[in-house]
Structure formats: structure tokens, C-alpha cells
Image 1 (cartoon, protein in one colour):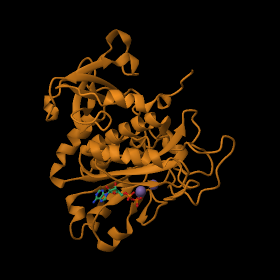
Image 2: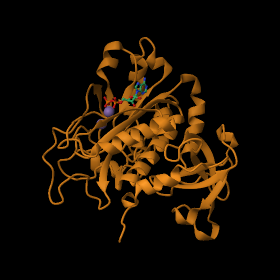
Image 3: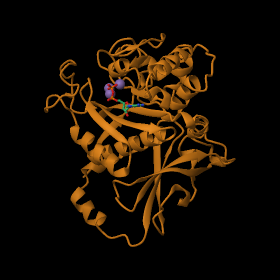
Image 4: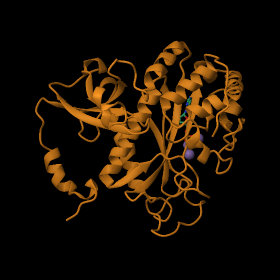
Length: 371
Ligand code: ADP
Ligand code: MN
Ligand code: MN
Ligand code: MN
């Protein structure tokens, strides 16, 4: 028998082993971002007791030459535990631990964008920056074809699928439900889900999260999604435009506020931030996908509820703008705003750092990008 996916193995047989007691030992799954800046890697070690905080977790290492992170001759990379979650797959007392990656010389790996993000967040701690990110993604079969789409051809045109219900409208809800529960168990700040405009495309929201925890929680949620999809024999894609043509792309709208913006009359501070963002459009586009704008160029066409990648725009309740002020925020004159430009495969550490640098540290200067 040829078995193509672990999803085809008997989950009933597996459960017999998963139910075995594990004594005093604890399994810690170390998770990190690989050299692509998008891919996640993981490996597990046993500890003798349950860690109560991140400081109790030992550093570890891995072979960077196998993750696009170093050459074979100097391949040891360090894993620095950074954020700990309950493991929804192995369950308590086991843990998932998100790690920063350092090179042999203990400098951050090229795709470790958490270190500088963390420094920037420390500088503005007193303004209590909150983020909320809306992660869109597409469920694919292992053949790369969107889940539930006909083998040859396309489903009916977009219209009935967004927030849809029914077998002919919601493609793959089992994944969404399993992921939602798994995130809640883990302690990830997931705050909602919905079916998207393109069939087999979905969204989950994480937030509001303060400072560096935005990136930590979004990466943890992504890891859990990939792991859930593995159990079901499907694949989660964060490609910003998985199907070219008249089908919506996938973004990662990033909502942002400070203490001042959330207080009475905060709209003024929101407008000031938007004005700063308008002067640094290219800088942000460069930070909003792992290829410096190239990925987003396929998505930000000015159609399908996106803005054009070459232009900055802002407006109340405008889903065709770079920045949207939600209608209730416009009415109450306080709250938050939404940056709709980040790509689904963005690094949330890069996105949140760029927003803080422009809006709160008042950094200026911009250089055009060729996309
Ligand atoms: P949309 O209408 O754009 O689809 P969603 O309901 O999908 O909005 O997502 C809203 C996001 O905004 C969530 O991630 C939520 O955590 C975040 N959010 C809500 N209030 C704030 C706030 N004050 N500051 C930052 N983010 C916020
Ligand atoms: Mn949304
Ligand atoms: Mn959406
Ligand atoms: Mn949105």
C-alpha cells in the first residue's frame, strides 16, 4: 500500500499510544522560522519537569545547513526560547516554544526579525501599542489544487462564499474549527474566524496583542494551522494570490492603536499616524512581504478589495484603500486603524516594527521600490 499522507494513517491506532501516561517527563516542541522567512521548522526534546516560564527552558541548536540558514562548514545555529504555549496536539503538560534563531557568532539569523522588533517595542512601551492581525489563507490539497474545487475547472464565481454556510459555499470548515479550538487551548489570542470571498479561503484574527506578542501569537497560530492541516491531509497556503485572475488574494490586514488613540478624541492621533504612513509608502511595501514587495505586487492590483501597490490612500470604511478607518472609529472619534497592505505571508515582526518606526518613532525617508 502506498501511503501519500500521514492523514491516511489510522488515527484510532495512534490514539492508543497518545493515551499512554508519560510519567514525570515533558515534551517540548521547539519551533522556529527557517531561512525562507516563511517556513516553520520544529523538533522536540524531553525535559524532566514542566517549565513554568520561558527562562526555565534551555537554549538548543539545529543544523542550519538544512534549513537554508547556513553553510555546512559552520552549520550550528542557536535556538533561543522566546514564547511558550500549551501544546494542543500532545496536550498538558507538554509545550510549544517559539524560538529566535542566532548564528554561530550569536548574531541574529537573516530571517530572525524578532530581535530588532522587540527592541523597538521596548522603546514605545509607555504608549501601549496594540495590534490585531487578520490572517487570510487558502486550503489546498497535497496536489496544490484548492480544496473542494472541481478537478478540472473552477467553482462558480465569487459572491456566495464570504461568511457562507453550506457544503456548496464553505470549503473545509473542519480545518477552521479544529484550528480555532487548538489555538484557544494553546493560549493563542485568536479572536475570530470567517470564510473568505474565494472558496477554500478563510481568515482568522489574532489580537489585540501588545507589542512583541503580536508576532509571537501570529506565528504560533500559523504553526498550529500547518499542524492541523497535516492531520487532515491538506495544506495551508499563505500565498498572497494563489489563483491568478478574478479570484481574491490573501492578505494580513494589520490593525493598530496606541493608548492615546483609544482614549477620547483619539482620532486626531490616528490621523497623524496615517499622515506619516503616507510619506513612507515604499518603505512599508518593502516590509510587508518576504520578497520586498514582489509577492504583494501580484495581490495589490487595485481590484478585489485591494489598493494599488503604487499608491497610498486612506479612508473611512474604504476597503479599496491602503489604510481604512473602521466606520465605528470614525463615529466615536477614537479607536484604531487598519493597514490593509501586508501580504498573507508577511512576517508580523517586520510589519509591526515598520508601523512603530513610522507612526511612533517618527522616522522619515523613503526610497522607491521596483516591483
Ligand atoms: P475587518 O472588518 O477588517 O474584517 P476583523 O473583525 O476581521 O475586521 O478584525 C479586526 C481586528 O482588529 C482583530 O484582529 C482585532 O484584534 C483588532 N482590533 C480590535 N480593536 C483593536 C484596537 N483597539 N487596536 C488594535 N487592534 C484592534
Ligand atoms: Mn477581517
Ligand atoms: Mn478578510
Ligand atoms: Mn480587515
